[in-house]
Length: 273
Length: 303
Image (cartoon, rainbow over all chains, first blue to last red; front, side):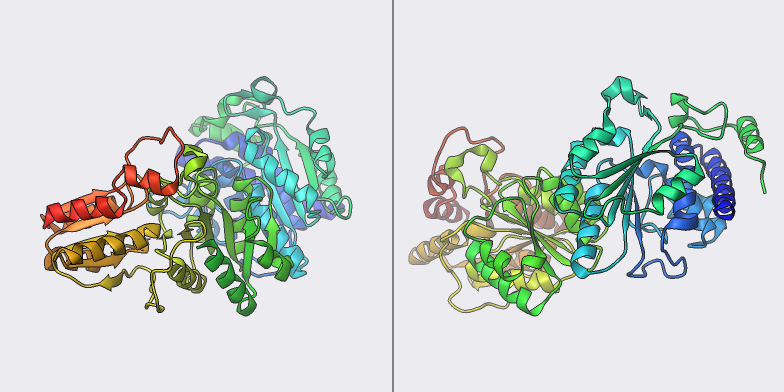
């Protein structure tokens, strides 16, 4: 486990560095949301997901769907780190003619679906999980949701469906960083009690620290949490995690670090490699 | 049309095991035959069209040919963004089926009138839009969209529409069916107006006016050649549709305008105004000239 944690922690550090450089270069938004799920993505792609980077459409692969499509930069980064496409592609993020659009695009190898409008991923994931069940396939479907997007009523339809149909090959992960687009979750539209809501809909729920690699790995290694129930991981995270001046600051949903701030951020994360 | 659809779908599902059917808790007395024969490929998702549509995309991305089924606007409007982003953008192999298109649910009121669906669907990229003219075209269209890999919208009437085609015509997505030839005027029909248009053509013939009749079952991709030929070879064009603006009339007008054809042109469609009262399908059609008399009057004025 310690070796594994060292590996995923280093992957998390590297993809944070990539994402920071990408949004800086593109003058793009959404670095805060990238950093809050960095550790979750690193654990998923570094250890948990059964994928073949050289064969992205391998039928038996685990599916990972980024429903919070605005967190694209860091998913591109982790896919590049895993070898789905060359790391150099990351330099083209949001530039003219690049497939690496600001919201996640399925035209990039390893990306299952394009999202960007919130509240779409979980339904698509439900369809994939149902196909897996009825086909007798053993792949799993992971859907990463933001807290803000749980405002969308369209999420609660698949939450109801997956519980009713006992899709225990479906895993939702809520990147619960407590800050949505225009305010804190608590102020805008409070989700609490969040765990109880999922449980009431028939899901097996676990709450974890979404930055603690040991907790993340241990939790994701025990899926499904309960046979016959879909699993949800409510991951408590910090928006902008890893960069002191970004942590917990709404502004970094929008801002892009200038050269000086980028250097500071990179230094805090152990510098460029 | 819905009976022709489900019978054909069951037949196809025997041959093609990738076919799935999702419904939004509607389809009583229609879908049971599919459900009972193919329970493993059928889901009633509940009254949740957004989830139905997103799930359909997910299933299709796992190799299924997925039909979604509900009535009038429900599988189209409520879940439009799921259709645009999840289905069209991903070129997912999903077939959206709406029964009761047009004014089929006339007396139920405007919420149940599917009179903007063709306009909305035909602007979506990748979407094939089909409104068959009768149960025969419905059967052929169902078969054709299963063979075609990509998003399709199938707009059906309800039940009991007359059979217009006595034998199976050649049915090709994107190709109008020439119902009868003539040179005085061309009547272009889409969807369930076909029987009425054929009666109007008969009436015109009795008055010495030879009408060409096209069943334009596919609105996207549109049969430009058939429209341009009608413009060049006949005295004018009349479009007939049980739908508001933005549908067949607009599609045909776009083709004519871009080609620079100043052909006499009239469009029979519903106004851009909700119906505020009850009425049978026939009575609501007639008010807006979607009747034999209405078509004959407009066509005669052109010749």
